[in-house]
Image (cartoon, rainbow, N blue to C red):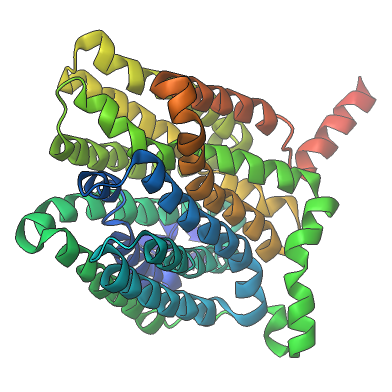
Length: 424
């Protein structure tokens, strides 16, 4: 019987999910399914209606700007005002942005309106999902934190890139593209019901009794921590590199795949398979990180492996003339490698004793920036260097992230190294 301080552990505690937050995890899964149902097909759909690759890249870039802002603010806002309140704010922003995007932008293909409303929509999911990450960091014991954040990325990615993709295949056939977009609001509301209403956990933070002025001062810690803790800043850079390709690929990789006989429906299926692999390894690498070390897991299973798998995902269709089995295997390998970065969500907040919300904000900034940087790289470099040039650029970034992670050491690791040097 496993116990902790004489207390019997539940099954959820054993696998790393704080049992008081189980409804929150489920709510994140459903919310992100609604949010991500168009991610793999919207670009192609808009291009079929007459928009260029550069225009769709700009649309995703505008969306990425607001995702980045909201991602950075989510951690410190959650710490200052409470995660539940900020998650509710994210829901309201999402609904307003999405309904306006569909009704006034996509229906009439009004590009200016689409840019503004899709950008507004971008504030929604970071405020909702990443605020929950602060909750997890305060509720999880340190020896299970890697697993707890692994499960967060399991439900986050499972909703965004797996359930969203597979649901879209069915929904587009029955409701059409516009109708499918409208159903996203329904799923988001269901996710909010579970994460905010069914989740009864009450998190009391030090900011709970602060006045408004003190809370606003708390927000500045998201910026000052970058100077006070340079290793936190390094963690933010590595987190940015982690998913840049994820947001670049949907814009240009379907075109590359089509050259080798891989249709858009097959691409959607593959995208779902890729992230089915990813969510499984989110949990695996969360547990591996707790056992083998968070930093080592990110270096080898993240950076190095992701660089190799990115190249394979591009070149396997060329080398095999679109052999689906090998292309799908390459995709699953790439999806698994993205999960190698999961321990960052445990490593970076553990660099500081206090202000974990500020550290999470830096990580969230790193999670939000790829939504902007990925499409921006495609918009800037697709014409001059082509798809192959973009692939090599992304692969090299992954290898750089492995090198940067070498320098992200926990205070205990640095102290142990100093003591070893003194003994020597």
